[in-house]
Image 1 (cartoon, rainbow, N blue to C red):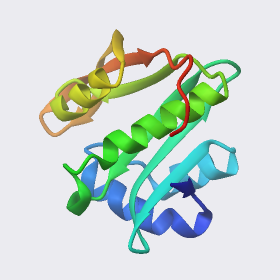
Image 2 (cartoon, rainbow, N blue to C red; image 1 turned 180 degrees about the vertical axis):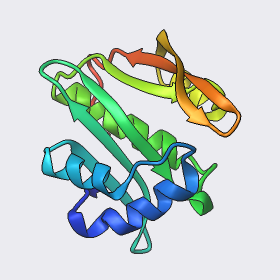
Image 3 (spheres, helix red, strand yellow; image 1 turned 120 degrees about the vertical axis):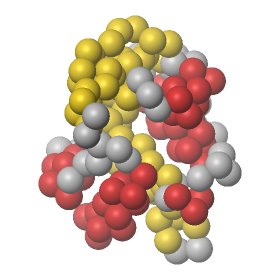
Image 4 (cartoon, rainbow, N blue to C red; image 1 turned 90 degrees about the horizontal axis):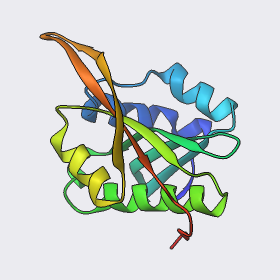
Length: 149
């Protein structure tokens, strides 16, 4: 895993568009990089296979985006990226870490719960789609004592 650079944005955006129901734009990723968010990628054989963006606050953080290329899914890479981002937040004493996830994204909810996230709220109708609106589940994880490994 390494820091994301501006040269990575096209490849990251391609993954984002292919795997996210509510994808970020090129501008979102460029703004995150310019704003010194904690943006990381993982590579397999020279190709970006996963990415994550963490917004650091004064004493907490928010996981804004995480994605794994479709061909690399179901291999534990998403869990690894998530655990590394949580460890980075822990090292920087940014706790808790918050995130929002679509209530119908059962795979993501299961992953987040299995890594220590708990539901702390809901944003009704937050995500718009062709069928209407979906709730966002707001989750938090206490990362005290986590180490990057």
